[in-house]
Amino acid sequence: MIRQKKPQGRKGPKAKTGCRTCKIRRVKCDEGRPACQQCVRTGRTCDGYSIWDNPRLPLPPRTHNSLLSRPLTPSSLANTSDDERSGIEWFMVNTSAKMPGVFESKFWNLLVLQASWSEPAILHAVLALGAAHKCDALIYNSSSDAQLSGCPEGLQRTLSHHYSRAIALLQPYLAVQSKENLRVALISCIVFACLEFLRQQYQTGNALLQNSFKLLNDMRPQCGGGTILLTPGPTSIDDILVEEIARLDIQATLLGHGSRQRYLVDSQPLSSIQHPDFRTVRVARKQLDALLCVVHEGI
Image (cartoon, rainbow, N blue to C red):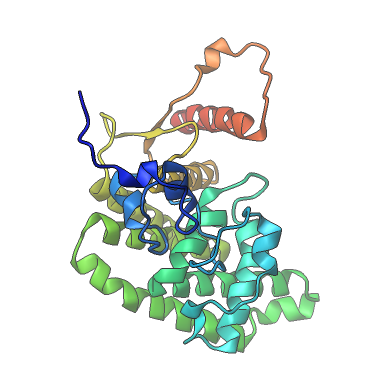
């Protein structure tokens, strides 16, 4: 099939601005946040914005350390208080590293941070989770007498304020259920579930996890029989969301909570692996996901 003779963008020099995905594809990027519409429309992961980046400057190689070393002065923080900026810093340095455990997570290390920059509902959900994590850390590291007193009152007020604010800001997204709105609601719901699990409110956390499945089912079809397909390497925003929900659900199930959801890992069959040789940590994690899915089905 002969294509129409139109792609001037691909013939010209590589763009100096825009997300990294559009630059590689040599297409015009609208530089939207957290993901440009060019990537959203085609189902790709917009993998070029570091959340502190000036969208008009060329993108440097993105690493966790360089991300943290940039000043906390993006334009989207203009209306935030000093306490909120401090909360964002805490989340970036501590919470986003704790939540995924020992493995890298595109949900916590990339998607949540990007989304919080343009979606106030997610930003307040992130601030609430960060406050809950900080409270947990303070209690864990304090004396026995201080542990009995629980979370400091000021920190508890901060948590409640951002939690309530996030829920209020989510209402318009739930009223009009477009795919983009469902993504915002789903990201927030995952963050809320983790917050409740962190506070040891397992029943509430599990209810939020089930709501995440409902949002996911509204957003994308399953692969038959109610089974959710896990891809070996997430390549889109939806893949990242599915991966995070599945891992959270499997962990909850192993601890006596979670759902009866079935998962299918698109990877090498376990029966064919006699002497596994994992070239990377990501490959090892992929097979661990497959093993956990088998265990999950047997519980």
